[in-house]
Image (cartoon, rainbow over the protein chains, first blue to last red):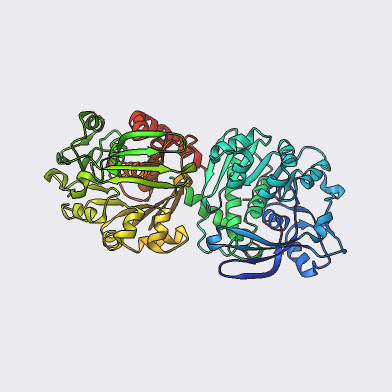
Length: 307
Length: 307
């Protein structure tokens, strides 16, 4: 279906090492970060320009995992002054809760995203989940009027609300989860929260509800789509980042952002995120390949088809 | 679309008075009960034979609310020895919790469902949420092999698990909510719970997830459908009963129970339940009429349509 390489996607976010404990397993120190998941997910559908920073512990084997995909690494800085951003957390029973047990910003603490000249005109921009101030700085370096999508998290709503509110009018697409949408709008109804968010800047809003799917808010209407029926969740870390990566990758692959293209992109996003949660790190996502994503895309069309 | 009256549906359950307190309002004493909601919902799509019991406080105005629909009342016993079943409850913030504050079984305590002779061959049977022992007694009076659908609740899983487990093989369709499905199967994953339930008797299982829609489990596949995007929930009482009523009514209306017919029935069920939650009692459901249900049916098709 996608015979052309499509338009490139600029992905900015964290590249990290994670250490994750779930009710059934322990990951050890594994590759993670919002930009890592988003880049690999997007790269199945469109070429990626990656902007991020890694430290002196980011080895060849890690670079090679990114190089295995159409991901340009010119924008991935290596800061030899310290180790890569490290995060560790524990998930509770049925992944209902997540507790951060350690955060070491390391070289990410002084990360100032700098776009290589060739990246500045990238027509699709994905601002992964990082401080809104850094998301602003990326947009300040952009030439032209790309399609801009961004993610966020509860932490930024708590501590950087002003920067986040100033970011919203700069976005075309804002993707966040249901709890975050309620927190940011003070609306307890997710439909009202989505509509309220459209009035805060972005033309398009997607609210993710985990195992309950996601809802697209667009001037042409609402679109509600279920999650893939995953039965073996190993680790939900990175699901949201993969979702956004595939979503923007799908739009870029056909260079179309109308309502039907957004719906199709949400099906790709749902398919891709469902692979991510089936392993620690990006293991399953990397191993799956485009064919597995297309398979789940077709399964999802069946799952949601009334006729 | 539905020009023929369709096959009749036998509905058995409670007819009650409810008194409900929500975070924003108080209902006063209003018409309720699983059979009331299910009958009115089903009656928009197929004629209904109602089996239940009311007491000496059930007035002409209440009978007239049922008579306004194609609901046969020969099977609705009046027991003059006491008042009608009464239930009162309080919903917490955002309807996340529900606490029963009073239950007066009254004439329902000695209710023994008796099917009038003409009801015994009704080809579609809906066993509303009542004690599984009563659900068994209804099936014991049935002639032939009707399509049998049943609902349940956490209370029966707690106190009548054996009767409920014995009921499951007698059902074609079992409808329950996600928490109940997990409780009954000891599976924390709703997809696994649904599949497990199919192995416990019913060929068809529907798991309801409230605002997150519902999932159909069928030998031909899964079907996941979103909820209607309700923005003004006034009182969720009766939503599940209305859902099941419309579901079985839709199947009966075309006398078809294959996978496509079940999917269509779920869209009708979703549309109908969304009306119920917009008022106390059956007010909105009664006032809406078939046209409003068809309107929401079409809106739901749009909401979930990828193309």
